[in-house]
Image 1 (cartoon, each protein chain N blue to C red):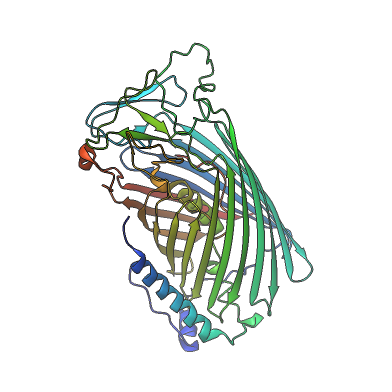
Image 2 (cartoon, rainbow over the protein chains, first blue to last red):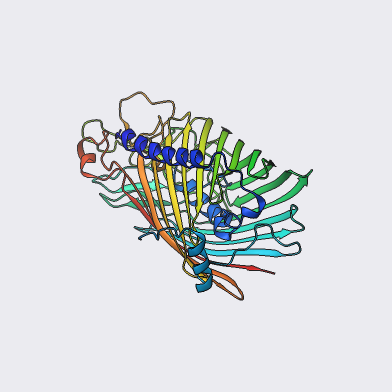
Length: 78
Length: 440
């Protein structure tokens, strides 16, 4: 079996640091209703259509599925 | 691609507005009475004559008011090509029997063993309804179904969402249950039994193979529980964290996959039994239960004009598979009519405990074994981009992606002749998707 934990842990650590930084920087902020112009933009919404298509492709080719929500159905045998 | 630096400050924003560089800002909630229709035509093609899928997808969403909405989705997949059957290459001709028992196929020396006998059409249908319960809580309920000639999936799901903290926080909890029926061509094989030789079958008029392989029809139950939270982190940032617990019970084996049995020194396939194929191949066998746990986190950031999404997923299961996924999309809003969205995805997984490239003659048969590449130790990445253009008639988009999966081509079990072959050849695929989204 190949070894890869170091690289993976480094990547996850970087991501966790980024998330922690973002949360710390904004923890005390409550976004008021009139401050939601950016959150309301179409490109800030998840794209459920493409996500469902991707989920089915990766479900058929890899041993993992889901994460964003429930995994789709089907055999995915091929 | 070089990412543009975020422009900050009211002066810059005002300048952008004057120049028309800011995209239009549609509101989140749909207007009541609108039908939102999202369609796409997808081509998925693997290299080396492997699987090709052409898929048509139609999603319809109808908002009755701000919180009540109905959605419906139809997908039709048409699959052709050849798929690895699990056997390893050999220096001799290899002959395999199709699942129905009525056809056989031959693989040339040194070639990867691909089963060319499958051809499949899949139709999937799902629908959901969202209904408010009180002022800050919503309830979603839905069903999903899909049908292939040898497979039927039926599922129900429900999800509660609650907004609080001035709608800065939304938490949710969901449950899904599915019952799948599997009617493999030729019946499900008995786990780790030998592949039989082609038969001259006068009884099987419909060509489905009857119960040639002895295991008949099978089924499985899948239960998923989901819990998560979405949190605004200021005016520009949002984070979503979720945890999914999945439990599958029943027939989890792939009824069309086999393993080669080879000599432990020479790596040459051993002779098959009387009534079997010329060389010995055993049908794979997996445990009848699987528990998966998945953690997911996504961060989205809005720049003045563009946006960035970054997500990570960790999955672990009791088959010994651990996987990590990191994915990012940068949305470059070129102008108010068009955008370009580069996408990167990186994935890695460890092998299932019962994954074997081959079985060795003379060894005691394991309880479970599979040579399915999807249960192997591999890394994968996806690189692609989506271009979208809004017109008076709706939004058109084109997405092109490249996917590559690569494991150790010559793992520890590559003895004798096998050392000269790629036992786990890389998989590459192209994904091309045309999309058209409009509102009625």
